[in-house]
Image 1 (cartoon, helix red, strand yellow):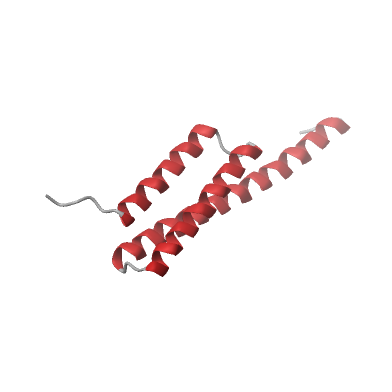
Image 2 (cartoon, rainbow, N blue to C red):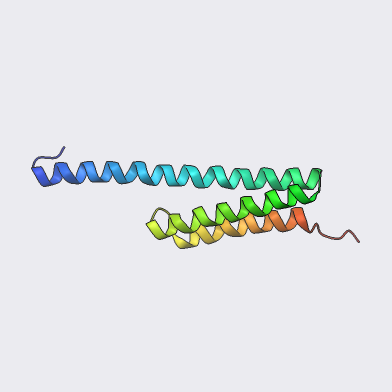
Length: 100
């Protein structure tokens, strides 16, 4: 355990940062799940409102992922991987592969 004043302060700062990082990650995961569910909803019932919902959800998810990288919560390669997953899901939902 912390023995002096500065190390006690570092423990408090580390805990505060951990909680902030946790909230960023949680919000990012929530937005990603919303995007995936919007894609599945669009693929089941295509329409202009569903398509707009997909676009809005991917924009908000990308924004949160980029902010998490900027704040140091995520590594940039991890963020690129997640954004790639989202883009592939949206592309699959909006422009399904032609069956030949």
